[in-house]
Length: 409
Image 1 (tube, rainbow, N blue to C red):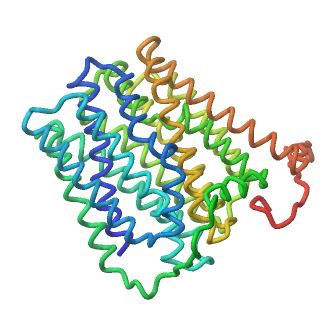
Image 2: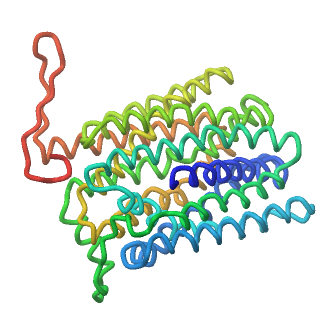
Image 3: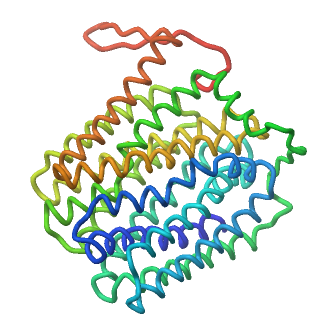
């Protein structure tokens, strides 16, 4: 029931993201990538600003009820955007304001939604459930952009926003139909003063968690600005329309689904997987920056999507499996804030680079983020796990020193 409701809603969400970036880039501005970056900053900035409240809410309030409130709010905001667009009254500041409000609602929704998966299944199935939940999300990511591209060309972006508003009903209904008595709910006591800081203290004492958050920050700042990369390459490098723009997003989603399915096969991801995903992520961006044609660029996006999803899905699984249930919401809120809160820092930078030097140079920033994250992971393995590399029988061999029951064990 949960997967069925979320996939419908996520299709609508991805449709809106495509339509929103498209109207900002082609209707409300003259191909201004900085404006697209500012929309992203407003939409994802609340993840960091509201972190003390969002982690608290995920740990101490009923997560199902939190999501009922946030999903309803986001549906109303999508409806307002659709009405403004259809009536021809839409202005750039409207998009800015509604993106900020959407970001505030999503800031509370994301940690509650991520940790709610642990209430649907037991601990033994959690890693697989997280990966399959990501698969459903990325299936919507493949379908939504393709539908959005066609609808924008046929009936306009306003109807895309209205369809997204209606799609929130699916996840709201699924939440209402769940058998609440079968949920694996972990009850927390009354929060003590400074309980939010416990999440940071917990992470500070764990070198493995700290390096993962550093890697997330590096990739999230300059590498996860996909709307800017794909929209500007579509418009300025390949000179294609909304349908082709939507298709590029769907091609990237094919890679994302592959990455999520690969992550689902692993009972417990390890640090080496994150390092490899970050390294190939950087290589994928390098290829994308050099691709001369539309379809070759789309092929590089498949690689980027697979690596990005492998990295993020494995990270979520690692964090949830290694964190006590009472701390899980706060730790996940920190991770989500690092991932999505880093975008407001990087997206205006990426947008300015596009406007000044072109989208291909911006893609090289994404490549640099992947390589930097891989270096951070390698440094952790060398310092804390005594990574050693040797050649044996003509093959490259790696060895790690054993550690206690930590996240990387």
